[in-house]
Image 1: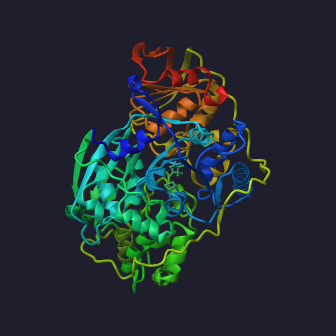
Image 2 (image 1 turned 90 degrees about the vertical axis):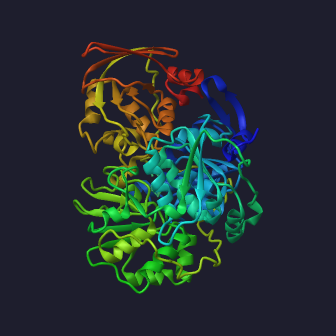
Image 3 (image 1 turned 180 degrees about the vertical axis):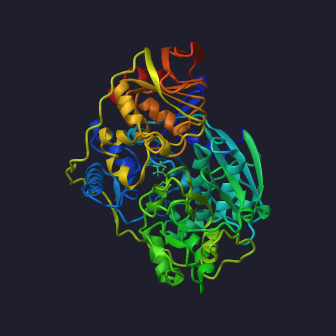
Amino acid sequence: MKKTLTYKILDAHKVSEDLENNKMSIKIDHTLTQDATGTMAYLEFLSFGIDKVKTELSVSYVDHNTLQNGFMNADDHKFLQTVADKYGIVYSKAGNGICHQVNLERFAKPGKTLLGSDSHTPTSSGVGALAIGAGGLDVACAMAGMPFSIVRPKVVGVKLLNKLRGGVSAKDIIIYLIGKMTVKGGVNKVIEYYGEGVKSLTVPERATICNMGAELGATSSVFPSDEQTRAFLKLQSREEDFVELSADEGCEYDENITIDLAELEPVASCPNSPDAVKEVKELANIKVDQVLIGSCTNSSYYDFVKVASILKGKRIHKDVSLGIAPGSQQVLQMITKNGILDVLLEAGARILESACGPCIGMGQSPATDAVSLRTFNRNFYGRSGTNSAKVYLVSPEVAALSAVNGYISSPLGMELNDFSLDVEYPKCDSLLYKPTFTSEVVMGPNIKPIPKFAPIGNSFTAKAMITLEDNITTDHIMPAGAKVLPYRSNIEKISEFVFSNIDEGFSQRCLDNGAGVIVAGSNYGQGSSREHAAIAPRYLGIKAVIAASFARIHKKNLINFGILPIELAIEADLLDEIEVVWNEKDIKVINKTKNKEYATSCDLTEEELSLINCGGLLNTF
Ligand code: MIC
Ligand code: SF4
């Protein structure tokens, strides 16, 4: 049978299959963690009592919590470094760059499976790997050599025709696709790219596209490994990692989409959702206050060549603040050597650390009501740190031109090749450390043990602690930003912030009531992989989430921490009394206040049900 590239890689890694429940488990070759999810993932890994990681390669990155205002983040870094050294994990120190950019440059290999405790892990699929984001506990299990289980994904074949026009970017391809498929259109699917148009896209462009596949809710995205891949790996001095990979000619996809690259226009995701897509020309003349270029989506050398071609000899508008964060030390070295940094400085850019920074609300929050244009991947409500800000997601080209003009501008038709792409890529590994197996683990006072959770029981009555609409993000559930992120290793403290951006009283209300349920619409938990969005509500007594549908990673996180995800659309108001009775797959939900009864059967496997029955995965070790 002719196979898609997705199933070639999945089948080569298959450990078991459960066709009845449409699930499969696969062997994981590589893992990555980042600091904001990593401390929890390594606490979980340590609880297994294993002497070293069992993967081919595991890398621990520090890129999110690099703002060290107080001892907490620095303590976390020390914890991560000592765990990495002791247990056989490569350590990427703060300053080395954003995990996905560095991983693409130094480690990603065609045909390998990569599991990362960050939802944008699929960035590495740009070289033809199958890279998947997951909660920290799943990554900890993979580091311990356990297979990773997924819903057998449907494969969406995206055929790319022709070539992009000048001023149109890889970012426009993926934003256009998100507009078409919506933020829930990719759940339990892999987006596989093929066709003539693929050949014209470089690996950094493919990585941008795979990166934002996360905004479709997709399990992963994948590109073939071809001459572009070989050229990229050669520039990274690792041509030996190249293997050619593609789908079988004429294989069948579950869904088909065709995009004519020559017809694409510059597009933008408008506030507050990546799928609120408009053509940039429709937004022309909107005044811009802030422009930020960077993040794991658009911070490669390739991106800065385009940006510098626009900024060369120009000065940014006086009312705009332009912040630029190169994705890695390698990119920073290259833009320094090739004259791009001078161009950026002369134009008036503020150079930020090679880290996630403003993308996760770590600094650079816009002014009240400000318009902020960002080359990032998420513009969820409150994520920038300013609830009233209007954040647009755009390509580096749109960002740079708009920074000069002071209003949103379309670069369509501009040829942007003032700087060469064919340059030396320095092997910049001075902040990467191979394990020596000699350290003892150092744990600062803010790193608290993971709380133990009792099983929720097969029948319980609890109040609806919050009732929510569709597409609630993990940024709504468990906000990030400079104030909250330092508590990622302290569940008791971080639980005070659950839903704090939209409902300040939530956490106290839960503690006062003892037990509760969350009621929501479809695609609950979209966005980040942060398992804190499950652990902290569990800590506050949440026993079940009743939602019309769930995002993939968040649903798994709920199960891993013993919360029952019930897929059901129900009517409820705040503090309605809800009774839940569940027995294996049969679930009965009664809204006692409204006197309404709903029955459903859940799609969880025996194994998942037994995890909830015993209070979560950690109780099984
Ligand atoms: C994000 O982009 O939201 C993050 C921060 O990278 C998260 C991980 C986290 O919350 O630590 C993600 O995407 O998984
Ligand atoms: Fe970091 Fe932003 Fe990428 Fe998340 S999306 S990994 S916060 S740069």
